[in-house]
Amino acid sequence: MDLTFLKPWKSQAKVAFYLKEEGASTQVRWTIDSGIPFFLFWMKKSMEAYISQDYGRGLRLLKDFAETGKTNSSIKFLGLKKHPAMQYVGLQRSISTAEMEQCMGEDFGRLTPLFHQKWKALQAGAPFSIYHKFDVVRKKVIYTAALPLTEIPTDLESDMVTGTLPAMQVYSVLHQGPYRHIANAWSAAAMHLRSKQFKPLKKTPPMEVYWNNPKDTSELELKSEILFPAKA
Image (cartoon, rainbow, N blue to C red; front, side, top):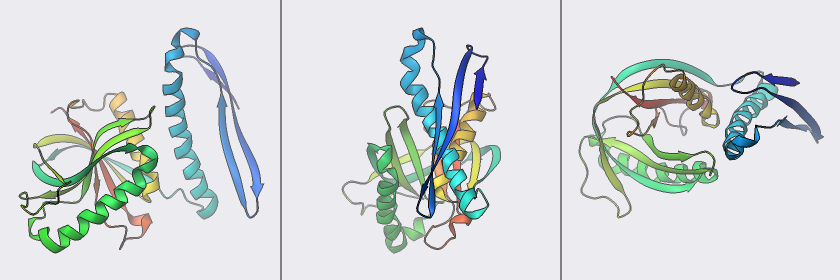
């Protein structure tokens, strides 16, 4: 495909799909070949990172569609709503984005049994993650895997953290489908932010809420909610 950009500057790009047979499967490679004005050289790594993210999301959806006939990822904009104040107990990490899936699985694998064994009477909502920092270019993330509780227990393990979230307004996007597609909801929320559908509370990090458990729920029925703190 020949792609022409008109704004913010004029440029041309070549977009291609390369298909390679590998046994009973097909390897798909999606490329874009373009350039930016020399005075914007400092944007190169950022553009490569964000375009790579978009292409990755697209390829995962294409894989689903080729194998099942469906994309298995749906998004619903719930818009602005009130979010109650809450206390939480969690585990915080600073890792590479490549480690996220394994680390979050380990973190909730530790927190969930403690919740059922010790803290179930203190339940104050669904498990969630707080994304304190997400650096797409450097592929680094700082997050807290958390359980909302009515009060902070005294029998915490040494590496656990605690915190309090204030009552606030949030902008909500609900995703249903396999967690590997959750970036679709994040991207959609980011586009609504960019188009000024809501005004963010910049000092308050976004969150991801998990409304059902992958251990007893079909991945097609998994529901995750993206919450961006927003100005009233």
